[in-house]
Length: 477
Image 1: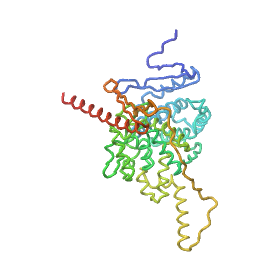
Image 2: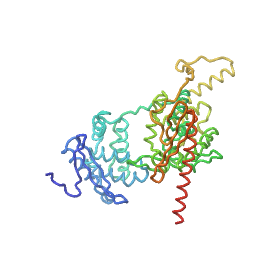
Image 3: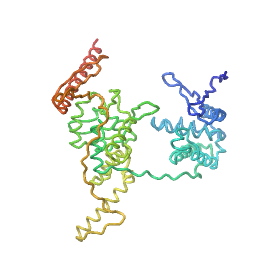
Image 4: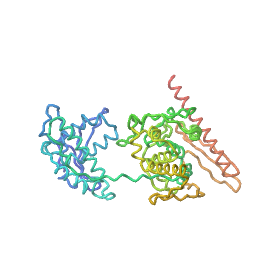
């Protein structure tokens, strides 16, 4: 029989993937549920060692007990909890805690603060790069990415900078370390033909309004999913961006936007506003893009990522991230003459310099085109084309047809052919736990689909009215 560990020592168990996990309770939330931190190791002995280091580093450090010979892990925890955590958002907190409590403290947290050297840090970064990955090793390999190693370095350096400012150490050992050079990710932008195919396919996959609005505004994914109908003035077209939605620790969290400049108002083009007016008639939720499972909850960012991947694949477009739709909007805006300052305001950058830096390749092309226009206007001479900037061939539009899925979209009923000249449409939602069905009939499939759509709209309106009536009755009862 296994020996029971003492209260406060934490727990150790073997996971299904063959690794050992140690877990210790560090406190309790407002509902009384325990908050825990964990470590992972290849064997039980190593797991117990890492768990001990984690527990030692998490011992509460009172301000009067701060000293130069305290463990680096204790200082790192004190710095994060008291100086860093209060200033960052929930999603960023998760990223910091993953680096601090799963990587940095278990490996170098036991070293005294005044004895931590650049060599210790450099060796730690090397270990992360060679075998620091704790999850999905078979999929991504044993080592962490250059970006993750760089983030761990920045966290250590920032915490040690504060230790220098407070007089605990004389100099920051992280300043002498070399870290991987990060190569900027190549920006992916959809071509006009790809945008056309994407929107055609989006209609079939029930995300046309979402992608159209994104390609017309360049909002961040969390911002567009957090939009509510109260944020949009359907008369003036003014759209306010006041919040964002993120998935943090398996829960959707609504918070303020990324920066102060992210809280902004933009004016939607008239055609886009018309599409949203029509779309509004079919939505009963306060959210502009509600979850199909929970009407009073916004769409899950992860679900949107998966749906975009499916639409891109069916539309025969290159595989891009949702954020690349933002790049597509910005690139098109610049190429059609929008100035940097206006674009910076629309997409919510802190300064125009940020926008200029991100889209430098676009502005370079614009300058070349401007110079060519001046040459033609003044000298009447067509300047020679640069070898590095070949003309893009015009892509002819294809007769693209949306790929239909194997199953109908949820909430659209079903259509079947009864005989050679008769079609039946059926919609059967659950109302108060009871299945209510209505049928329509027509001589053609198209007519049946149209009649079914009208019935669905009527039934949804009736259901919404009944819910409102019950709500009012509950308030007055």
